[in-house]
Image (cartoon, rainbow, N blue to C red; front, side):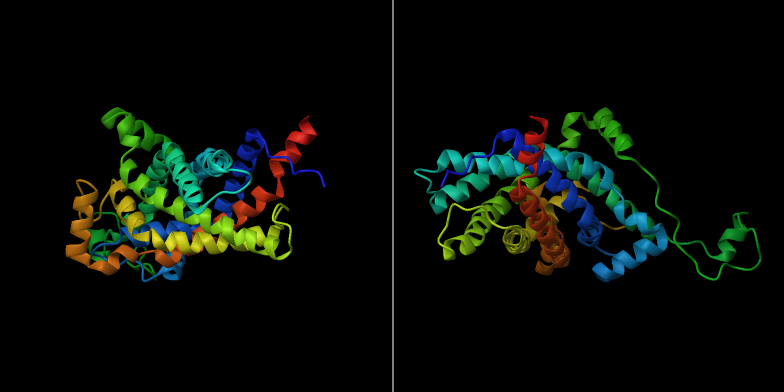
Length: 325
């Protein structure tokens, strides 16, 4: 049997990019709910993921669930491409005679998580501001008919049947980027980079070795460890490894989300850094606050990486390059 050809780096980048686009499109509304739940400190606007999604659709429409999706879809291609391709490159470099020990798998995951931060940090920085705008708008009190009349804005003596919060301001990723660059320079886009690194490196160190071992189970049982894993196996392995890694690093994700949120609601804390954020959350909200959005995060990461690994191992990049070549 001919030896399986190792995928080229361009093919890995295409696979990672396509996988990221498909995965993010499928799970973005749950990611939005995760961000809003993690940012809740005092006023509890949402009681859970389903409540958050229902209220978002009611006040902002269906496409309100995709606020911030444009920046995420724009940057997820290089982010996922770097992450998946870097892990493969590191694994190849650390392998000896086709065998990679566990420490090599962990080290490869660490390298992949470190490489992706250069794209992940500004992407999440912009995405979080857009995702959280609806939660901040929902906290603003709706004026009563008497208040509206006193301010001269009442159009009718009959109050509306249901008072709704005003729609969130339609800021854009471009306006946020320009403002950050003007006021804080390039460092503004990389606010929370340390927390992002602190989250993504452990995630990759858990995810990639776990995925590789789960993905190899069926092939080893079949007696062909070098065969390409079928789609369903890569998908299930990606979902399982993604869920475990996502829940494991949720406390770090909460800290990162809080640090990267620029606009705060009434009475909500601002933080000076990772240590200050950790201390304030523990004192004011208790240990359970570090698991806010854990279920949402697992529901985001599991299908995201399941789809990503399925597409990646189907070899879309190799097929496209073969057609072009």
